[in-house]
Length: 314
Length: 291
Picture (tube, rainbow over the protein chains, first blue to last red):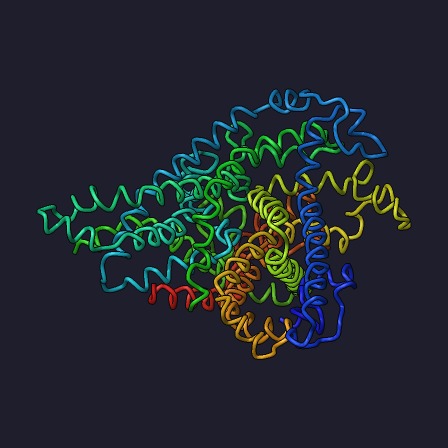
């Protein structure tokens, strides 16, 4: 990481270095600086950092702000050569037109069916496997875990051809059960891995105590482990929901007729015709993102660390 | 016996919808598999012909080169911005930190298809804000600049969408790693006379290196296989100059009905990423053993 701190730049924000020349100073050991100067420097530096932080917030957030604000603008405001930075005459017309566009409700329904089925099946199968992996030491356990991790790295686009041919062979292309099957391929491995972490977080002694008190192993899981893992189960379910809801490639390839497609394919098809209707598109995009964003904000802390969990201490 | 019963369903699913298709992919890559074969549901064995034909195809090498360049640039940009923001998050005051974190989470949560839609609107040639801004600061040829006429610019826009979507993961993950570095270590280094850059280079960086490595590996794997962003951005009709590996494998199979050839390209793509996947799996298994 040669991009990290350059001499005299204590705020190693590489992309932004030119913006804050104020902090450039000779590299002197901190303790030799008189206390007063140091504090002033500290404050100045912190102002620069704050400004930079606000700039980053604005730049990163602008596309989202622009989508949402455009969704509330009327035609003349959208198609204006000078941008209107906020909707002067807010209107719901774009949402109305997006919702009344062909297949919207059908495709939202399809998405819900596919996502629900995928999440329920994945979680049931994954919870059992997670308990096995977290609570037992068996031959092939390590290989199984390694496989789970490895398959998550296989590009989904590489699997499209065989998945398509496989479903085509049994007449499941362009049908929702077929798409559910293929969605398991990326939701299940991830769910097992994440749930394994949640099971491990429950001290095994609790189950052992329950078994000493006369529970069978299965009863101990049901009455002790399950309630404690339940929050993790919810978090995993939501994350699985998000992944399945956002999926585009498989749905695009495997579901050909418009009445069978999912909402992401519906949204992407907005733009293929010449002369996009930007207002309704932004409204539709906002609506598509809404459930995902709400869920994601709720569970972000709990689950997303799973990808790199424990890697710090090594 | 119990653990085997418990993992059996998962193993069955993984074998059925991942193992079998992967095996099929390799098998098809050795077959002639066109429309006729598709109808009969059976390919014709041709050995290494598909591989020989893609290796002889200059387009293939061009796509490989383009994808590598695209991956290198986007991963580098993502890491620079992401790690920069992670450090920045530690230096800003509470309110700014909250604003920035919330924004990062929102960007992270944005579905890819939605992200592409908003960026299409941003760079629209007639009413896009980006063209307006560039015109205002006096760059020639704006407004009414078509970003997709020149494939390099078009891919730059696709890259921007990819980087924008990937930065939050890097920033938040690295920030989490940074906050696990014990403050005493840094303080001790300062007392020993280390300058701030020295502390960062000699204390902080080595401690977060495992996370950095892991994130880089994931970003390379993800960006190498970019499909949706590109595909939707160009309206499902990428010209030859726009092809990245995933799109190339797709158009070579579904576009011109040469599934064998497309499968061979896909196998090459999987193999290209296999090494990095091994790094990821080993790293995760090492932490798994200790947790």
